[in-house]
Image 1: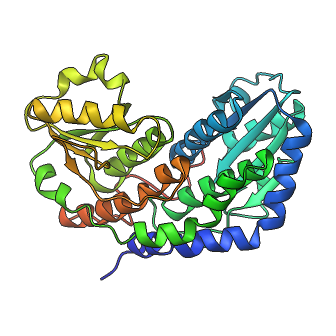
Image 2 (image 1 turned 135 degrees about the vertical axis):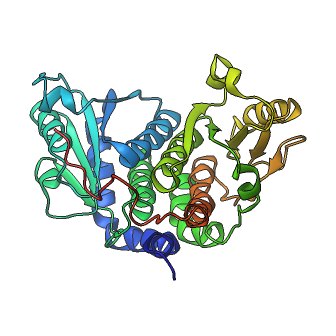
Length: 340
């Protein structure tokens, strides 16, 4: 019997196409608002998978615009009542449900502080949309499985679409428009070669750099959520500053490399770990020691990184079931987490 999570993974290409069609006018208006504001910096407001989407957008915005992006702790508003100084800034809040109290409180504080406030949400109307000057429906459709998949991807697609309008970047605009086609290819890729080498593992690392680090963070979370597997995400550079001490013989390490400036670095580190006996995998044809996981080349370094999450989602859903678990209903988790 097919799980809700598997159905929702398979819906990602359609969901992305729906977003790009139905939210086109809002995307353009939001991009123009950023162009008019010309923010000196941006902040993001999110938790969980949404925070990993925000991390992806942080790297994309910094790479494309040179503007720094910082993550705000939602508790600054909801618990500490801090007053932020954001008159020269823009903020991006991401919430699937649109009603987590601490995310809403921080979005309200950002609006009050004078920022151009963008909300990426799967629920309109909602408290997060009412708290923001530019709410955008990510059009993911109902997401029943507890583990977010299509809402995570569509949050990033929405952010990249806005970024392409803000910067008037034709190459990024074309790459985003082609994402439904690229996702349709990526969702069919098979990463089951991971299964045998994870069978007796108790822990693993997922590595990346730049936007792919955000994908690694999401992958590590999904291992924990759906499969009860301890996984940690690190920058492929940062892992060498201490965590590599845990990488003994047969320790699994997955490297997520996009076709960007960091591909050689990430692949080289995975090859080095593989040469020392680690069970090393990487999404790059440049690998010499690490085993190559299949990937889609989208033609743009930023969207290349995003496409990596689809074959991973397919793998981790099947991996969860193979361990006798239900990926639709992870233990001790619920769909909407209303933290304060």
